[in-house]
Amino acid sequence: MSHAQRTTRRAFVGRIGQATGAGALASAFATVAAERLHAAVTRVAARPAADVASDEEFWLPVQQAWDTDRALLNLNNGGCSPSPRIALEAVFRRWRFANDVMYHHLMTVLDPRRESVRTQLADLFGADRETIALVRNASEALETVTLGIKLEPGDEVLLTTHDYPRMITCWRQREKRDGIVLKQVAMPCPLRDPADLVALFAAAITPRTRVLHCSHVHFTTGQIGPVKALCDLARSRGILSIVDGAHAFAHLDVRADQIGADFYGTSLHKWLSAPVGNGMLHVRKELIPSIWPLFAATDPASGDIRKFEECGTNPVPVMLAIGEAVQFHQLIGGARKQERLRFLRDSWARPLQAEPNVTIVPLLDPVHSCGIATLRIEGVDPSKLAEHLLKKHQIVVASIGIEDVKAIRVTPHLYTTLSEIGRFVDAVREVARSGLPG
Ligand SMILES: Cc1ncc(COP(=O)(O)O)c(C=O)c1O
Image (tube, rainbow, N blue to C red):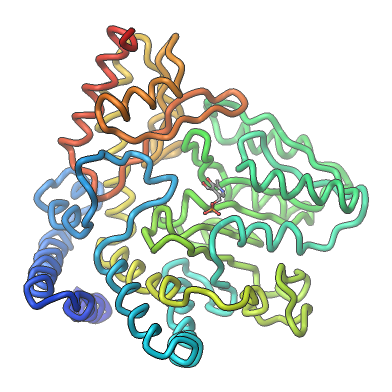
């Protein structure tokens, strides 16, 4: 174990102890749970991540790091994820402190600590901290860039039919306002070869193309996009690249240089499990001066990334708990988390794929997918299936109904147990074999 890892673990146990001010018993329990988690991490330290993915003894203390209501089985963590205890308690602790002398504690004492969160996120993403802006969600991150890039009438922007609707709406607003031209390439579904998508983008480029916008993991199906190849393509043609990483960050174990985007926007309340209302924008350093901030800044052409954080008084304790979420993520390890999410996906998708009338998208291999996939039963309306799962089995899934995707999207998280996945498999298999009840 490296010195850095030892330090992270010590800090983590220490913070768990403080995090639970609710009583000595709760505090003692949390400390024991944190120590168990550390012992588990130490035990698997030398093993490959893919091997640890199915080690239930290792994952038990990880599952117990969340206090979620197990009476309802939440398989829509892609919508947004609950936070582990350490991050949730950190919000309450700092909120109570802020509440004592609200403005002074909030803005004078706590707000400057956002700089340590910036550093933690930069380390996690493998980026310069001066390229990381703390925003409220992926929408704010991406709309900052979409509305802030200088474009002329007739300039073209490329994206796919499977990009997030709000991001498309934002580009459409620029179309109406500034006369730019939006071009959507038809996303192959399922994508059989990532090179096919790159070829579609390449074929759509014209001398007026200025921006290529793509999803790192598509919200529609969980399809992993070939973002590195797309960003390389854009750069080779002098086009700016924007990557929507809402579903990829802290899900896939990738760092900024493995993506190569000019702009990367993500939510942190999905796969990082930070408290709801957190996002991150990464802007290539030399491009910062060229982007207008969404909320006016004193010097809009400044090269200081903080110009994208001018949203007014905001819930600082929620933002600072990104720090605890990053710490938790790093303790588990990005590679181990990625492999476990893929293993959980396989645990439901592979047995259900064996049913003759069930279709799973995307392809279940590491190039195409990780923790997210969709399922369709021939002849069964996906929204009715989602309703049935909730009403009859107390299982929550997302129903997707856009473009050519009519399916349920299934997203377990690290706190999901194998027996819960088994419950889901049994419930869906029953419908696949016998249809929805009356
Ligand atoms: C691909 C993608 N982009 C952007 C967003 C917007 O995220 P948020 O609502 O956190 O801003 C989502 C939300 O699900 C998404 O799936």
